[in-house]
Image 1 (cartoon, rainbow, N blue to C red):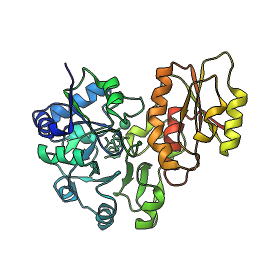
Image 2 (tube, rainbow, N blue to C red):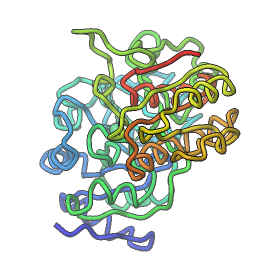
Image 3 (cartoon, rainbow, N blue to C red):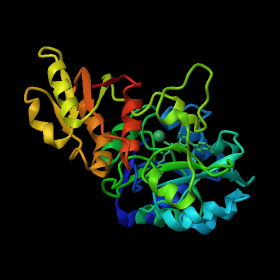
Image 4 (tube, protein in one colour):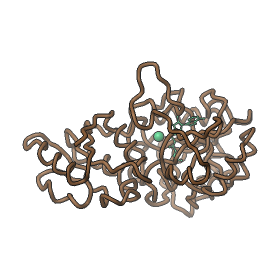
Length: 339
Ligand code: TXA
Ligand code: MG
């Protein structure tokens, strides 16, 4: 299959492909998604094939306007509407009780569905033109870092999908925050583009799913099925070094192998500490938004440099830091050094 590269003026073409059951790479403010008509079971099934995604991992349904929520969900709590008013359109996914209109292929048989109204204008324009909700996981091959540009998405999906719509590089850079609104107390399933502190400011109490900060034990099940898989991982093994930025930078310097092909992902302040190694910058140590924006590209760039091992500095968990820490820990399979 030849994958067409579409530009913003091709919105209606992208919508036509989606309506006729095709797969289109679509830009969102978080990461690029791999979209299909969310009401077409066959089209949804082909997403799993293109990504090599496990069948038990449900997809998020994307809508152009919060009012569509009522078409696909039941028993929507008042708190969910409060979140929608505050954060939509934007990088927030709410897990809600599903309506039978949503195919089993989308929800992997669960009685809930993840709903998101993205902020990216082009993305919403395509969904509106298609006139159907769009099921879309991140546009990477399963297990790899999510794509934050057309080039990243082409690398994984060229020849496997009908088209990719170029909407520039993603402003948030990590995926949406996922919150389960079906429990008595709302529960954070995945940290992302809306920080936990902001959710708490609207909702009061929010619980954290244990899968966010530690690996799952044998037989333990995270509530977001996708959180159990090795994820966001480049080819080379990653070691995350936690502690104050100066200490972690010094630890990496001490432990870099002079002969082994080690790469470093570090904050800008330390970028010239490792002159004989491939280095990717995460932005300033205190700029967690910039850290999020750059993280997935940095992981992919390490693979392009062909390094055999990756050392990475990690921010603290305040604000957007929690999402960055979660992605780094998973990319490293929780291979973490505390200094
Ligand atoms: O920012 C994003 O959310 C991107 C863009 C494309 O919108 N999408 C994305 O989708 O990250 P994906 O499929 O890569 O990750 C969705 C996560 C998975 O971990 C999945 O298990 C979880 O959401 N999920 C989806 N539906 C769920 C449900 N009904 N209950 C619990 N978890 C769910
Ligand atoms: Mg994903």
